[in-house]
Image 1 (cartoon, rainbow over the protein chains, first blue to last red):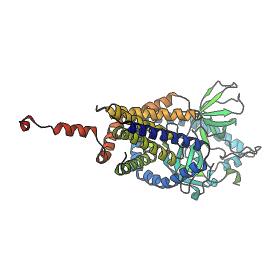
Image 2 (image 1 turned 90 degrees about the vertical axis):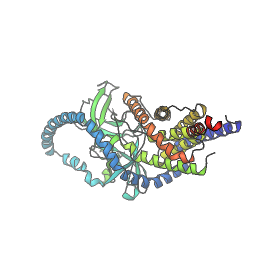
Image 3 (image 1 turned 180 degrees about the vertical axis):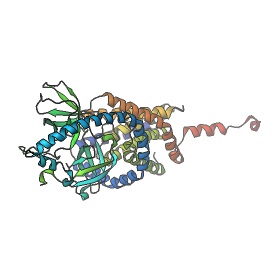
Length: 286
Length: 186
């Protein structure tokens, strides 16, 4: 059917492509400047096209989203009612606690610190998402020209989304909280138990909080928020304090050295549309 | 050999599909997962054009996706070229003609890409846990893509038809309809 020359050529091209892929992989991991430059160049060219495509295809996304939302609305409604009841109780308890604490020193400063409007918020739209199942990054339509820099916190109405990674002139990539390279200093809002929030690997609705005190008591449904920079720490956190991250869903091996705190993030990274980048460092805001 | 008109059509198709995928389709979730048009288009191109164009097209699509999303370079290229080459070899070795072939190839291509990508990520040090949710998402993606395979195959075939080197179905149809009748032979 095929002459030996055709077969040899086919195999040679296949081998060349495989070797090229492996070389690209190696260069990408080794931080090769040339590969990075090519990638950045294509990224800069493609970003505006992605932005236009994202805008023009938004009605179709919304249409499909509407079907999906309707499908899930019933189940979500029940869960939200339950959450509402829980939050009402918690709100009443916190309101009384706040009145008591406001008379003490320090609480107002914390409340002011959580006022995110002072942190230079820049609203951005998600223009591209990686077509993988690991939910690692998204691309947004704001970049260095809008004051974005690597490492800045990205939030949305629900809470923490991730951090800015690569910054182009008019676009940037955001490493999501579900990426394996992501980590954020966090604390349990009510008890103050601190730890690091990381991904659990393979489930965008499950994060792991590794507590600094292995035996610290963490209860189910507790709110986890960003810790910010600790007063006695020389290491500055990337994130301002008190940004909600998620709610504790389970604690494996509670009270032991091997306890693992699972939390469900408030933000569903699979359905991101608009996000806010905090462009000012919380530590520099008076 | 890949001609210039074919290269042009493949480039336009790859660009449009990759941008549509990352700008819109990736952001539409269906039962917690989303459709992935890129492996479908790569596999269908391999099925129509053969292993060599399929592999080259898969490599190019992977390269573009990795660049556009600032991902680890080479990873998607390797996975997509495997899909394109595999689909092309199927055509060259078996030349299957059943109507369900595009659906089967689409499902297999999606499974190869999703499992292959996750496995490669794991091998490269990303801590990927094989959770029920991940397996469920892979299955849903494969299912959705299998359903999309036939329309995608029809679209890709329609787009590439003017430049297809020798479409087996056209060749057969032409052969069967140009045979002389017994009357004309007499």
